[in-house]
Length: 309
Image 1 (cartoon, rainbow, N blue to C red):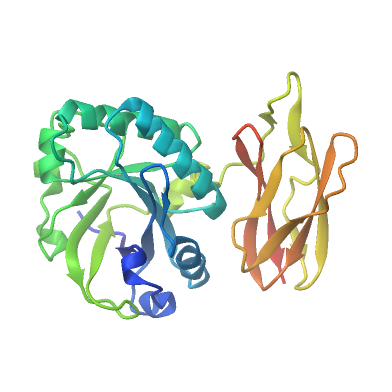
Image 2: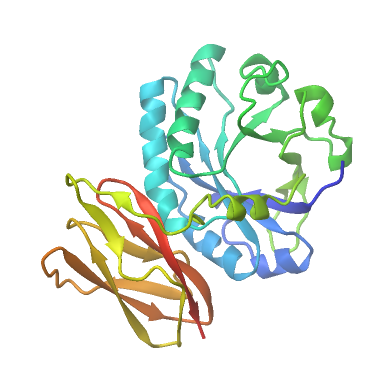
């Protein structure tokens, strides 16, 4: 099998890479650590995600699991979702990193991972499970059919992606393979993890309407028999420095933001009228970004795209 694209994964340990150099060196995507446990947010994540998008890289994120029960895993999933919504859309997977547990049974780890995956998947996310061979065998029984509904991000350090026998070892192809933890990539200080993907995952994610690429829909709000709706569901164009007013009808507490704050920002008008709230969409620089509505109840939908010219 061939590979569709090569990319890197980073966290705050790599600071702020030059993603234009990464892109120019032939790399196509970047995965960034976003959260860990139920309180930790990677301090470099937001800036790096925005810079990577601006450089033309496909971007995904991952969460480092600390939970050992379904209850704590649900808490971690909700924390992750509260942060990842601010980074949408993402055209690479959102991944669950499962490793480094000590003194915890395999069944407990697997149950916690399943709970996290279920909660995050229910929000319309393309989820991948990051594991090494030991966890694939001992915890998740991947070769025996375990977690067959979830994409696998397989950590197998051979230094050569073509030397990873994922089909033989997992019983199926891994959607992503991390084949080195010591790559040398222009724009990144020191050694960095290097990965490949089998298929065109951005195309899959966008076509399926996942990770913030969903078509505009109506979502039930926290009020009975009410809906949060946007007065704009068609894509529109806005000049740099110009302002578009968006009206949201529904319960108070709804928030609007953009998928790329370097292209456009959303500012509340703070003048609620009846059931209507108004937001100013301000063009910052040339490019295209989505407009996202975040309901107080926790739901989220994309209402349209705006192109800044």
